[in-house]
Image (cartoon, rainbow, N blue to C red; front, top):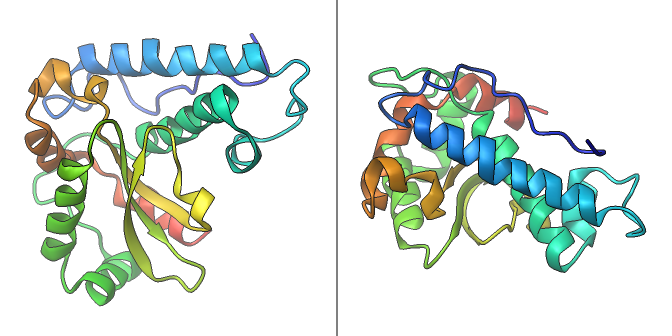
Length: 195
């Protein structure tokens, strides 16, 4: 045990099937994320970041400290945005209006988001964030980077590291990205936007 703990999933490990299998959740959450938490806790003593939040570490640290804190922050946002699959799952209300305002339509937004996720070279994340004026933007972030490092407010993310999808989709990253829309909890995304 250390300062940071492995987040509890807000759903059962099989709740996201068939989009994400319980086997992938078990490895991704139970092994990969757990390792980042253990690594960060091991790096904290004597680092000067003992009392810092994850966000503070991501904004100020370098090297292994930054990488592990960034992965924890990213994964907590990632795992925290899902719910059981729903057909024709779309945002509503003010979030839907903002997406239409900034991308033309929800379909155009999805297309651009998936394209950015599919074309990110190597490992990383694709994000929907809000800038200081509330405009929605899509960014590609390599490795453990997070939009807060660019002054943005992260709202939604798809993990494009292979461990996020390889058991279920092998090398078919675009298929994985296309399937994730079914499990987004848009109320969570909206709550992040209005914070």
